[in-house]
Amino acid sequence: MKFKASRVTLFIMVVPFILLVFAFNYIPLFGWVYAFYDYKPGIPLSQTPFVGLKFFRWAIEEKEDLFRVLTNTLALSFLSILASPLSVIFAIMLNELRSKRFRKIVQTLTTLPNFISWIIVYSLAFFMFSSGGLLNEILMKLHWIDEPTTLLGNSAATWWFQTGITIWKSLGWGAIIYLAAIAGIDPELYDAAKVDGAGRFQRIMAITVPGIMPTFFVLLLLNIASVLSNGASGFEQNFVFYNSLVADRIEALDYYVYRVGITTGDISFGTAIGIAKSIISILLLFSMNALSKKVRGHSVF
Image (cartoon, rainbow, N blue to C red; front, top):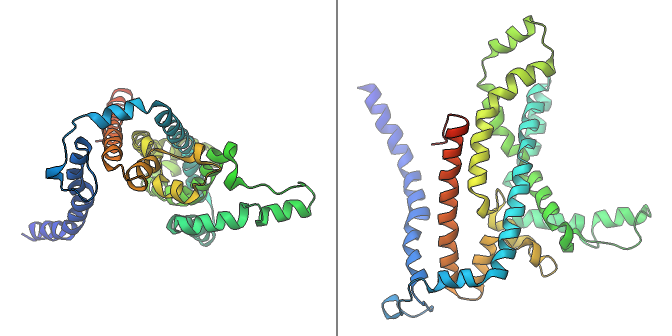
């Protein structure tokens, strides 16, 4: 009877979060209907002409813009995916620190950027990397450069610079998941390895790395399935760092939908692109899940 009561209590505790997910992720799906109408703001949908798949055909016809946007999206996402092992390495290094106090300090300092607003991140980046920023002042005083340069307006370096910002912001937060996975490894395995004469590096490679690989693959597959959402950074990073000098390299799919649907007011076309993105992301998720089941023998869900 007590067990049943506890289950009811836990369910009641989780209900508000289920309602929030439903309100912000499922109710907005009714807005997909605008993609099939030539909707103009201020005119009721009942008085709006039905156009069927017109805006989906437009999306196919806009080849140059979409190709550029998709190239930026995939490049930024795959660079983030390539950098994902850094969180694993960092978590292992933290776990190997002997001083618990120093470990907590490092973990706190590296996790803190995850909670900093992207507006503040941009302000810090502007202070450091703008043409009149701290970095240029130091390099010019050392006579390493003759003229100031700005990474914020360097189109050729945009993908790498944005990836570096993403790594700085998410490294510590991503390591938390792997530290939890390491904590779940049986300590007796390490004791047995010590008895067998295995050194620290050997224990890491033989026990720690295999122990966290299932977690790494699950997160990797989820990241691959969300490549069209521009990885961990998403819309906010593109929005705050967007400017005319790097527009051709930083405009990802989410920002393109915002620009088309909100800025120019073409809500129907923006909705159609958003629907296509959601469908492709779902297909990628199920494809990665099937691939995981075939290759590893385990599926994500």
